[in-house]
Length: 100
Image 1 (cartoon, rainbow, N blue to C red):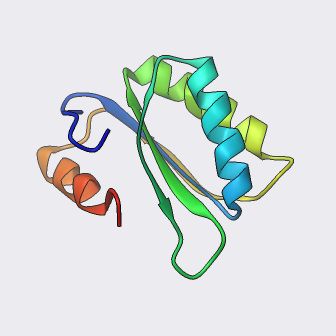
Image 2: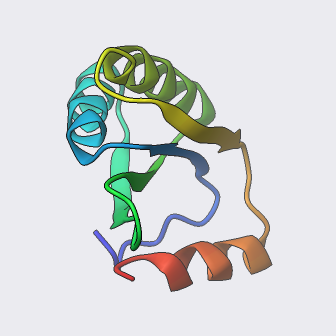
């Protein structure tokens, strides 16, 4: 996943306060739309994780909606956003966080 070129694809990013909630959210996202999971980073000081989903904008939005709804009973969403077309500099920053 890490070496894939996601240039030109939308990104959905969400962070939850519990890792189990993230797994439930990932499953729902993958089933809801044609997206790829670019990365999952565990929070270093907490139990949660940050997830990055990639695909076309409508797929990312659908996956994000499904993911956040599925995770709601299991944990708190601490942050979420969709970027429709990340800038090249933003892509560099995103790639630098994968696997950290």
